[in-house]
Image 1 (cartoon, protein in one colour):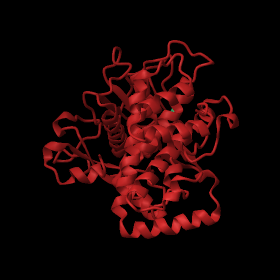
Image 2 (cartoon, rainbow, N blue to C red; image 1 turned 90 degrees about the horizontal axis):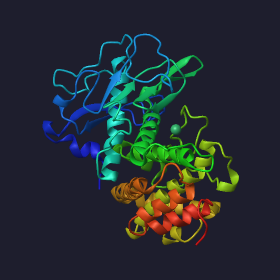
Image 3 (cartoon, helix red, strand yellow; image 1 turned 60 degrees about the vertical axis):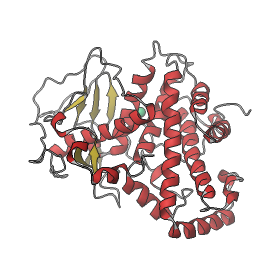
Image 4 (cartoon, rainbow, N blue to C red; image 1 turned 120 degrees about the vertical axis):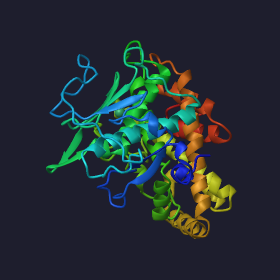
Length: 394
Ligand SMILES: [Zn+2]
């Protein structure tokens, strides 16, 4: 179990890694103004200026750069700002979060943080799908463009413009984690040979990337803590978990707690991804409830009724009971959520290698995730995918 990985390493010795700051949510979100200090499991002498290492490097173009595309690929060969470097102790938490260099340092830290989590779930290192052409991923810290994208050899980050306020996606963990999700998926399944209208690779890719963003966010000890305190342990409330894409460059805000089924959505890839993301979110919440019930922290009726059709009265009762238990045993709630998170993360990770990117359909992806699930998680996933009409009822 990897609960509170940041703190777990905090007291460790210098050989364990390198310190960075990460904002678990963009700093303009109330409650998230302060970054978390994290230890990345990469040695200080393995990180060069940029930052850069054997897997990736960051560039910050000096003037406006055209976004990459089919006919425009890395490496970036224009003029760059001077690369960000570490402090005298060779850690990167000396870089001020308000400085320009911080964009590069933060983007780098987020990519590593997410990659490290998913390599744990996969049980092996991710090998970039483009490594025959480009040995390293190029991260472009800032492009004057309202989008973020990952592609063949690159991950580049633009900025949103809200009433003249520019908000770089380099400071947006959700956005970066989502894009890293696309890179992980392609690296595990390979690139689809042809883009078939009948296949679901792209909707699945959006769903998987949203799940990567959500599950990776739940690896910040401070985020779990804040989330549970604010909801007093009740994840049925509206909360951070379903705000995770609110400034996403993707076409629409995607809510992990949506109630959409396959018969409610269009063929547009982000829309078609929604029921799958919803099933993943519901499964995390349900496994969390199971843990709470098993540890005597919640009413066992939580497991028997359809939470989507909960009456206000039942909801209020559950909320009161959960809040009381949370006050007594907050640590048990953290453990329960971390366990639910990891069970779903491992099932998702283990399913990837069994998928054929060229022909796969969402029902095949769902079946692969169910097959890869451990313990009682399979039946919960199965029921949720069936409710979403992704698979038939069995
Ligand atoms: Zn996407």
